[in-house]
Length: 108
Image (cartoon, rainbow, N blue to C red; front, top):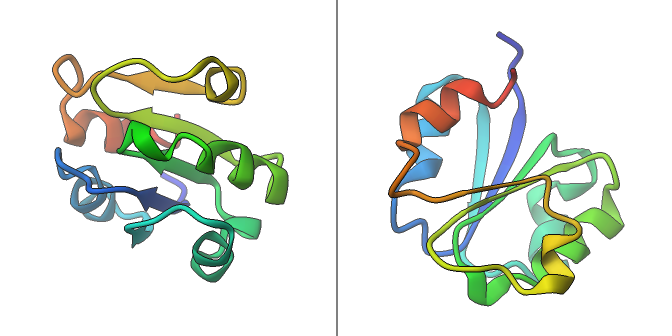
């Protein structure tokens, strides 16, 4: 398994950040996904960007603009706005995918 740098943004209602940490990855959790916060969290070198709050969907294009190679993963209930859907690599419904399963598959 390769250790990955992961940023988790939002309220993390389903506890994906602790699951990713327990899977052996380097996790930085932030409440707000604005440019200043994402830069401070290391988005320029992150492997994965996880959004847990759809109200912050504008953070996906921000993360992709700073790091086009980052994998954008949405782990939340509901539907993404179209503008964010185009830049999202994977969207998973927490009702269908357990946080531990998602964390274990990050480097696959």
